[in-house]
Every structure is written in structure tokens, then in C-alpha cells.
Image (cartoon, rainbow, N blue to C red; front, top):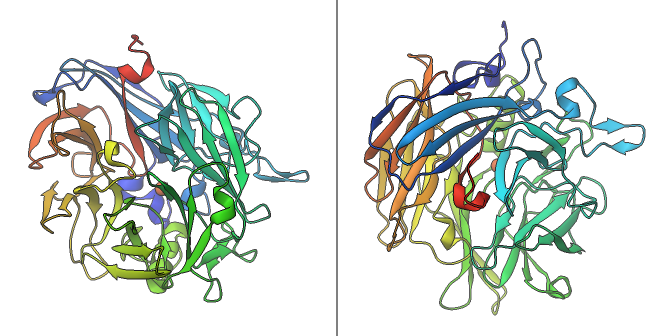
Length: 454
Ligand SMILES: [Fe+2]
């Protein structure tokens, strides 16, 4: 393909077809408790298709099936949505929520596998990654669904939102542990600001509105752009039935956060929120990469630094600072600590626009401030590092990080298993092809699928 679009080149070059391979070669010893599936979504337009925006590329899910020390299969499948066949999102009847790229994330909830894109309904997949169809929670989901829902590690509930550039701008949903929507609430005071992610603590729901908002003059297919007049704010709402009556919005410095690392109440009842964030120039560099325009960064997120907000609800104040000088994205953690104070945070590091940093899997110790990086080697790019607890885990970092590495020199990929404590390599599964870089993924243990075989 002849193109100058960075999201169709190098690590991001789409694959041309769907394959299945069995009995994969494993270097090292796969821990037997890694019995399940690693699923990874990616934007992978069909051959000959050049989307005007990276995020408009059709979703393809890559899966690796591990069982008791063996790597049983690899397969990749496009998510078969109307958009894959060219159906437009905007129709004469309004947005078609089923016309999804479904290329942002893939999760499991209540035993159901869902491929997600924030402008649309989720798409249900089988355990072999075939598409079942759009899933609207038995007719109860009338909005889009964020690609970053939060599963409460205690209750099993799924918290999520639907956002839109048109009213209602923000609707908050809760599904119970069985996957039934039990609450849908319009959030008062929200605006058309782009909301990619949010946070749920033990006692609060936290919404983030940055300076990127609806821009009808943006024609890449993603109608958003930076606005200096859009107020940047954090909305804090108590969890529970009447939370919307008590939502409070706090002004913050201009910026745009794509992903939440974590949020929690600290010992003084303040809310601590962290996530990689770009400033105005950082957003310009990223956006120009995402649309393939001149004046872009060398990476899709070349100026994304972790920012921490401490919100004092009693004083009504926000303390805000950048906490690390390494450009990172795709923050992950031991999800048992979602919503409570986590000591360890993981992320993928990228070179910044001056070349500082480099590709690696990063571990932060938030107590000591220590930072450790696992370098993956030249011309190799790791994907989001998914944490999986070890059998009998006691400490927060007793477990593994699973990341799919794109290797340009070998034109191949590996599923790398790192020890989350020391970032040492435990095992590598050789995949039969290079897996397109990006975006999000999940580990789905067999126990989440009723423990049954598939
Ligand atoms: Fe995301």
C-alpha cells in the first residue's frame, strides 16, 4: 500500500487477512495459572481502505489461547460491524450506533465478550472471536458506550457512560454483575467535551472534561478539536441513587487526558486521580499523527506525561502536577486495586518529540517513587501491558504482565510474559504473524467464562 499515513505504516501496518494457528512455540515456561485468553483490539482497515483518522480503522481482535503451560492457538478476526462494510455513522435518521469500528477495546463482563468503540454500541464476540452482533443490554442501552467501562472489583458491577457531542452529552450507566443495566442517569452540567475515560472510586464517580470538544469543522470523521474556550474540569459525583444531585465540578489546568491510571480516596478523604495527559501542543502533535497531517509527532502520543490531581472536597480545591518526565500511555494496574490506593502502576513508554525515553514496559512504585523499565529491544513496540494475578498472590505485584510485541525486523510478534514484580521475562509465545500495534486488550481467564472449555 502506498500511503503517508503513519497509522498504516511500520508497527501500525494493517494485516491483510484472518488466520488461525495452533500449538504455538513457547520460549520459557508459561505459568499454568495463565489459562484463558489474551485478547487485543487494533485498528485494521481492510486492504485498499484508507480511513481519514486512525480511530476510523475497522477493529480487528487478535487472540492468544493459553492453557496450563501451552499456547493452544492464535487467531485474528475483524469485528463484523456495518461499518466494516462501509455503512456510515451518520444517517438521515441520526447516528447509527451499530455502525461501529469496534476497534478500541475488548473486555469481558458477565461472561460476555464485547468489542468497544466509544461512539457506538458494543459488539459481542464468541470465544473464537467470531462476531455475534451489536449488544444493547436487551434494549436498555440507548446511548453509545465508552470503550473504558470499569468493573467494580468488589461487586462485579460494570460502570460506564455514553457520551455524545449532542444533548444529552453524558449518561451514566450501571450494569449488575449479571450484565443487566440497573441504572441510567443523565449527568447534569456535562458539556460536549470529549470523554474517553473516567474513574470509579469506592465512593465516587469521576468524570473528566478537557479542552477537546465538538468541532463541526473537523472532517476526519472524528468531529473534535482543541478549544481554548472549553473549560477543563473534573466532575465528582457520589456513587448511589441520588449522586447526580450532589455532583461538583472543579476547574483544572487546560489539557486532555485520554486514560485514567487510577483514582481513589486517600486517608484524608481527598480524591487522587492520575493519568497520562497532553497539553495544547501535545494534543496538536498527537492529533496530527492520528489524522496523518503535517506537523505531527513521531509517535501517536509523543508528549503524554502522567499528571496527578488531588481534589480536596472539603476545601473545594485541586492540587495538580506532572509526576514523571517519561512519555507514557496505556496505564494499567492490578485491577483488584481499581478505585483504591494502588502502590504499583504500569504503562508503555514512548520516545517523546525530542527522542527521550523509548519503547518499554514501565513499572512505577508510587510509594517509593521508583521507576523501572523493561526495554523490549530495537524496532520492537510493546502493547498495553495487562496485569494478571499469580495463583495464590499475596502482594499487589504478585503476577504477570502480558504484552504483545510488534517486531519490525522479524516481521513477527511475540506475546511476552513478564514477572510483574521485577519485570523479568518469564516466557514468550511466538505468534505466526506481526500483530498490528494498538490499542487496548484484556486477559480473560477461563474462570470468567464459567470455567468451561472452548
Ligand atoms: Fe482508550
